[in-house]
Image 1: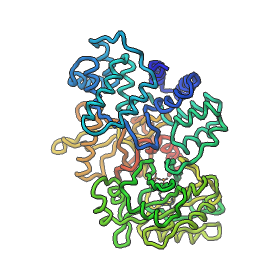
Image 2: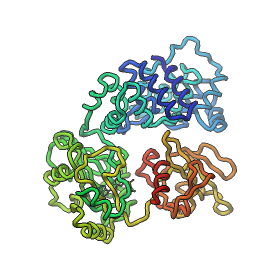
Image 3: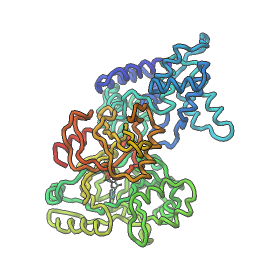
Image 4: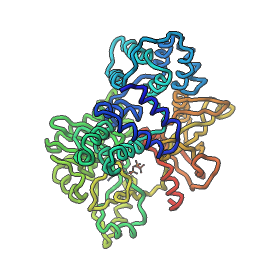
Length: 552
Ligand code: ATP
């Protein structure tokens, strides 16, 4: 199949902002594809060549791509850099530059989807001496055969910025529509596999029944089930009837997989961090059975038995070097709270049964390995639940989680069956899309950050400028990062790629025509940089509106 056909689809998708039109375009296209191609397009349509769970990535910087574009069209990297600056994007720069392309490639074969996909995958595997030159030659081979529009989307795919306004939700709905399958079935398959190539191919070949058979595999991470804010205890506990109430630890959520002899540890963003936590791997090897499993828990850093702030644990899992030293300086403690797989998939079992299994398989005889502190709440013991909450806060934790005893585990869902009850007011995780440089002495720093939330098309829509809560070191760090992500700078205003996630506290949500969402925040304060979250994990416009309507 020709790459140009996929590129025409990209162009049509970019030309509309309407979700339903986007779904129609993708769905119509998927119906025309054979099994091998649909597997590749399942990923390429999102601008990637590896599934979400994979730690492999193309990993090519913008400068290298600019160099390759220069060589492909016979101009200097500086000319390409200028065009990128003028157009605000490598893809648009290609359109401009290819129009002037001096070496016409009359005899080249048209690019195929298969060739593009395999070449891009190959890029991630190149390392060692002369790797830059070898990468350039692969990109050059693609770019010198490409038309202007092919070059536009090729370069955007390589730099991981496809910009056609297509996210997981749209691809999910398009697969459902193309093969006449219930959206929920497609969604579940995607949450379990985190791989649209598998989902699209299975949907085409085996329809709904095939998708229903897809399940968890230890070794492949699954999107975690998420929590909503809890209403008052005396309302929610009787409503659930039976609620497992647990301490909410302020650490990092881990998913630990054992597949035969191999133990892997993933974050909630499905990042493999096994290498950073060798002592945790040992803990599981010694204190859990040698059967296949997937368990979840929170890991916290401690000193003298007390939990340390969240940032400490973050530094610990980001560590690439001197891991041994970090093990000594930042001792970790695990609190397991769920099991998703033990010999067989368990996500459809009720939580109370999963908890029972977990209690039976984990050996908590050492200080580092624990089950989350819990109690079963019912309408008759609400004061005890309140007490658990107060004790949790006193011990330096965040509050409690309230989970419906009879519910299964629904990957990726932020639903009503798992709730959080915290002492601190709620915050929103928002993405920086721009900012304003300070004046005078502060002229070198971005002092005010334009933050945005994700809409239903996975576009980021502005909500507020946040300018308080940051110390000088953080301002400097953020300014540096923003320069790396710069799209344009005009006067004191900088626009950046949406990559950095900030946790923002505020006093109130108000209506405001000044911002793209139609809402804004009163007194926004930056609480944290959420390095553990990607822009796709940020909060949504839908959540903001729901908080506005419900008052929390
Ligand atoms: P927050 O910023 O409040 O942690 P979040 O967006 O990271 O929110 P939520 O789903 O809103 O995630 O809150 C649940 C999070 O709380 C889990 O992802 C997990 O990291 C953490 N947590 C701590 N203790 C528990 C527990 N006992 N059970 C489940 N999750 C827990």
